[in-house]
Length: 117
Length: 112
Image (cartoon, rainbow over all chains, first blue to last red; front, side, top):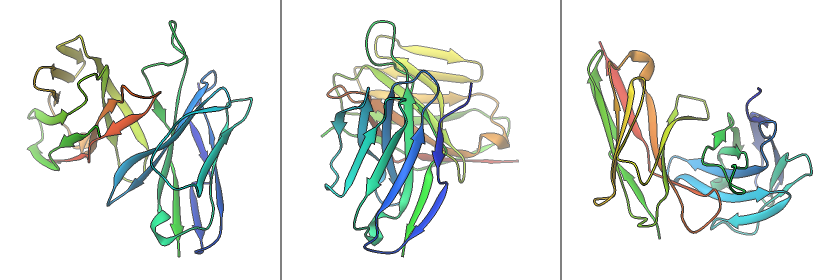
């Protein structure tokens, strides 16, 4: 079974631009979460989607948004990029458990390295 | 808010055991995880433990959970150079779906 895939793997953008990152979960997984990893702040939760609905959101400004499609693929968008948005963006997928909507195992993709200049 | 703390660095000799420690504050925590990150890579799920368990063993990995003290540890037996990486402890936040609270990561260096 293929793992979580993220595209692109590397991206260089200029301040003020916007960017869209894509995540394809493991086949059959319906939950996709996004995290930002920086040397200063570590790994921080951005948001989580399940069946095209955002169920949870972290403490990030409104410039960070996301969506999920009917095939469970997810995108996140960052508008008006700032230097501080330079980070590794990771997505994780999980499948529904037998007893509810959430599984306990979350599998991460390789990440998209975003550099803002 | 909820928090997870780890020591930042551990150096061990090849063949020895490594023990990485973690503390968390979420008193309603259900699942706790260990992830491994190698340079330039994403996070690899190593193992996880449910909060009603004290110990879980998986090949060279042993997880110990002291729920009273909110302390989690990961023991790697017979540590190899390929185990050199950053290890993250994470807590499944009890107040929201699939939200993981991560520690800052422990960098494990294995030397001959």
